[in-house]
View 1 (cartoon, rainbow, N blue to C red):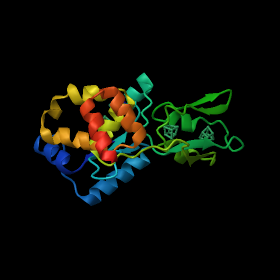
View 2: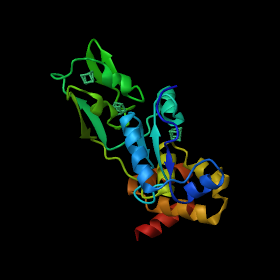
View 3: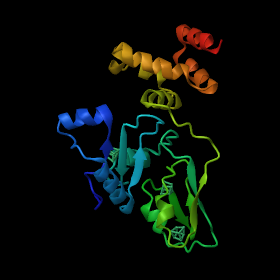
Length: 221
Ligand code: SF4
Ligand code: SF4
Ligand code: SF4
């Protein structure tokens, strides 16, 4: 739907190897990766790295009209706390001339002009900063969000946190064939046992497992 480059999302490590072997991706070196990130930035694409601290598996460069993830966010109004950054744009009304450029470039329609006043729909905002760098009047800047966003340690931790936030931990554990392997199940359980106490309580409420409750209690001792 747009002029943004398509051949621009990146995966790393085992995921990349598997996609290259299946002819879904091509191998590139670090130099080309950096060049592509620059191209993505200059095309106002939202740069979405996997939200984990270690072993990032992908960096997507998404537009709001073609990327399925951003389209879903717009269409269904999903508030995905895990995927946001720790920042939020703030408008300086005295500098804003209501030109609408930031509204046009926001990939998830999180900005609106109402009676020439700029309004942010906070629950939709990704904190990507695309609006800020497109304001020619320095009327927008990013500030830290009040609520702390937990950055998961790894992919298993991220999947568990997302499942808890959506109330779907039981589905993740009991209905998912991918967890048939002991290795995957072990990594999911380890992620649950390493959660902060408030998230552990939520996890326990969702699964209602005596086994998990015992494991958590032992871990605390
Ligand atoms: S659809 Fe979006 S998230 Fe998926 S690969 Fe494309 S840009 Fe990335
Ligand atoms: S781009 Fe800047 S000046 Fe234009 S509406 Fe947005 S904040 Fe206001
Ligand atoms: S930071 Fe700006 S461009 Fe990005 S989602 Fe929020 S309002 Fe939209």
